[in-house]
Structure formats: C-alpha cells, structure tokens
Amino acid sequence: MTQTVVTAEIPYPLIWDKAGWLPLRLEGKSYEIGFERSWRLGNSRVEMKFDRQGRVSYTRVAVRLPYLTTGDDSEELIRLTHKAVNRLLDVYRVSTKEFHVGPIPAQELGPVNLSHGIVDLKGDGSARELLSFRFDMGSGLTLARTQEMDSESILDLAYERPLPVVDLLVLNARRSLLYEDYRIAVIEAETAFEVGVDQVLKRYCLSQTKMDAAGNVVAAYSNDDVERLLDAGLTNLIQDHLPKALGRDFINTDEHQRWHQDLYLLRNAVIHDGEKIQADQADRALAASEDALVYMGVITPERWPADDRLNRVGGQ
Image (cartoon, rainbow, N blue to C red):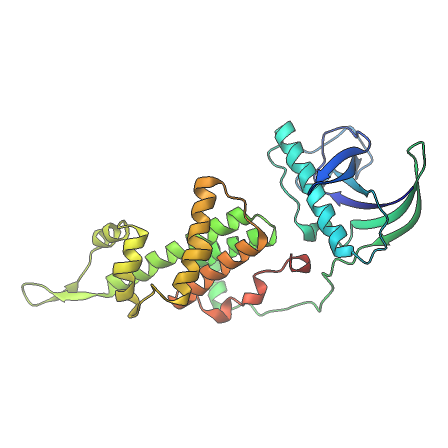
C-alpha cells in the first residue's frame, strides 16, 4: 500500500518511550502518528530538566496519511501535521504533567525540520521510502537589516528609565499572536487598551488647574483624586471621562465598536469561560486594541505598522 508520511522535529524531548504507530483521530478522520526521542550528544542517558529548546534531546514525529498525495496540497499537509503534533503534545502534557511543554507554532515546524515522503507499506508493517520532499514553508531569506540606535534608547540604557507599559503590552500581544498563544494575545491586547485609557485620563487630570479661595492657580486634581477616579470602572471612564480628556467622543466611533465587539467581549469570554480563540479572532482583537490606542493618541501608527502584526506561516 502506498501512503504519505509527513515528518517533523519538535524541540520537546518527550519522555514517553516510542510506541510504534498509534491511531490518531482528527476532524473525524483516521490517521496514524509515531514519535521517537533523539539525542544531540549521542548519550541517551542524560537530559536537561524543563528543556524547551531541545538542546540535549528532541523528538521526531511522523504522521501517516491513509492515502497518497502528490505534494501539491502542501498547505493542507502542513496544517494537518501542525494539528496532529499539537494534539499529541496536549495529550502528553495532561498525562505526564510536564507543564513546561506547550503547543508548537506552525512556523517552528520548518523550514529545516518538516518534510514528507511517499512510502510503500508492506504487509509486515515495514515501509520502504519511494520519494521524499522538503516543505517550502514560505519564510524565505531577505537582506539583513541594520538600524542606527536612537538617542532615546541610549538614554533608556544609561539612566535605567522605565519603559512605556503600553508598548510592552502590545509587543507581548504581538509575540503571543505569532506563537499562536491566542488567549494570552487577547488578554494582553485588552490590558494594553485599559492601561492606555488610564494614562490618557491621568495625564488629562494632572494637567488641569483651578483657582483656590486666595486666587492662586492650583492643580485641579491631586494624585489621590486621580486614583479614585480611575477606580470608577471601565464603562464609566469611557462614557463620562474619556470624552473630556480626548476632546471628542470615543463611544459610537468605529474604533469603539471594534474594540467592544472584537476585543472586550472576547477577552471576557477568555477570562470567564475559558473560550478557545482562533487565529483570525486574535488578530482582529489586537488590531482593535492598536487602532483604539492610536485614536486615543497613546501610540502612533508609524511606530506600529499593521503588516507586522500577523506574521505567521502562510498567514494562518
């Protein structure tokens, strides 16, 4: 029988002993999966605890499809292999309680370690390889980039200045999106938005002045006043206070509607219901957060190009 086998290497050194070909059910269809631990140093008696990078040992995984492919359907083969590998890892981490193990992003299945071949499966279970292909994962080489270090970064290093929290949160969300940790991407994106709202209101309040009884110009809000205001709740802040700080409404804008629908409700579903998030949902959520932050003037669009946000293999 002629079949297709897709092989991959993953950095996690699974402690399960190899068990031959195992039945695997995905999307209502039957496949087979096999795995084998390999050692980089040739010594199978050593390991590194919590090794997430496969520095000492790693695992070879193979997925066998019960039909012949020509290689033209490479995107589907990559998708199935990606899903099969992560299903194996989910079952493994629940069974062994190896908590440091996580899902493998599709981009980290290649281009070096993902290939497929056509094999002839004999009656005794042995297989003879007829043809082998290496997947083109589409990552491609580009010219090496260089950039002059800016003066602000030099000052950040020299004086241990605090880095902008919103920038760090957006970067965290983008990283989580790239590595397919979609729940965390949504949570970080919403946190960035809420911190941005607080920053806008705090800056506005602390810039306001008033006349005291003696006719002196004094601050209209103390730090304690600002902290009490920020405890009023997000809905109240957006409805009653944000328009004053921005000089225009946020509610009923396109940015507000997208934030509420694509990010806020989704974050609540993640937090309260453990909702499973798909790639396109996480991407829309992060876009909604970034666009709202731009609208509020917290970040500037030229520093956050949108086409850098979703940068996964095949745009998956």
